[in-house]
Image (cartoon, rainbow, N blue to C red):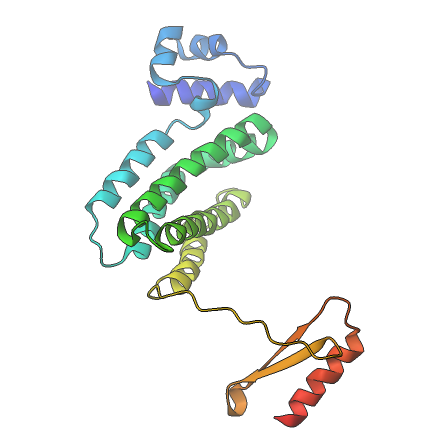
Length: 238
């Protein structure tokens, strides 16, 4: 029945537009009563996202069953559950993406759904990192990174009209997240500001041989010629 109602709703949204379609229109097209609609969907907006509650429950179940050895990898794998949901029905997913771009209210609703996924991932990570020190912050930042990476790859696929393999772009983006955050968490290093020279710029060199790196720190308003001069001086000294 959820699928029947969702299909009827999207047919009407495409024909009349979202704002001009009422719940009465949807149930008439589906051949059911209003009570049946509200048994499955609290509002007209919810019928646009008929599968997110199931997907959120699947994600929660998945995370509750994984071990503690790779928490970042676990939340990345959990995000792929959402990707598979979209990839199961490319035509519907592309139509929904286009509709949410056209209707500001749906975009706001979608953001609230995305936030629920992010909170689920963050909650899992907090259970692994703890709430002391940077544990909670680390959990929130990693969860936001995973969601951002997943959505970047997913939207590339949706904007293409559902062409190609959606997993390739998402996997690439999630690999970047894992590369950054799978390093063991350690104490935050103290940040020291290098002293600025009288000219307003200073140089720091690090490394050795061909791998030497030069980092410039310049105060706002330092003339570009002065920055270049300092770089040339640092290169000459190395």
